[in-house]
Image 1 (tube, rainbow, N blue to C red):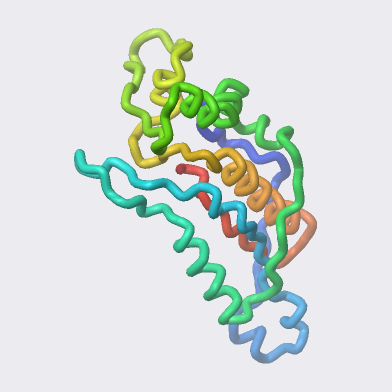
Image 2: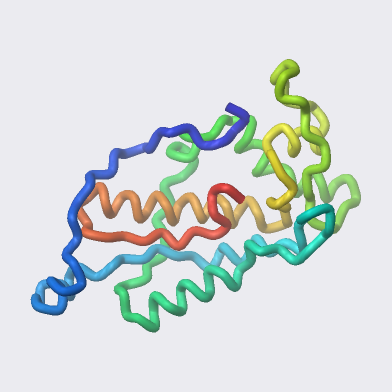
Length: 193
């Protein structure tokens, strides 16, 4: 309950059976059933300098090139149309995450920079979970409160990137809820980062 995802979706997803590859090759109808991909260049706004791995500062595994590679393959394989996400606002995000967590993500970089910092913001203090679950007043303590590792740096563009990533996921989910056979949300950074 420290701001992490609750097992709740804004709209239920109806399971379906998409056509198999063999069925698509045998039917001209499948041209209309290509995968719809949602994507935004905003993911590039979250490009951290590094992360702590095994006690060492190393280049981030989660970087813009990952999404670029996936998008290039979607386009190369002509899997279907790539669309920009719709903007559903904060309401569906607030159904899943606590207000404290969202406020932290929105304001973390500004608070970090106001303290004179220019490097990526990484957590370094993790409040003990068996103690009283009270959100610390200190920004550094808040990061540890809302985190569980040092693999998710916050940068100047993190909030916009994560907000748009949520909109990408919501856009694909809406298409499925409206009966689309397939939809792919090319989200970056992924929710666990």
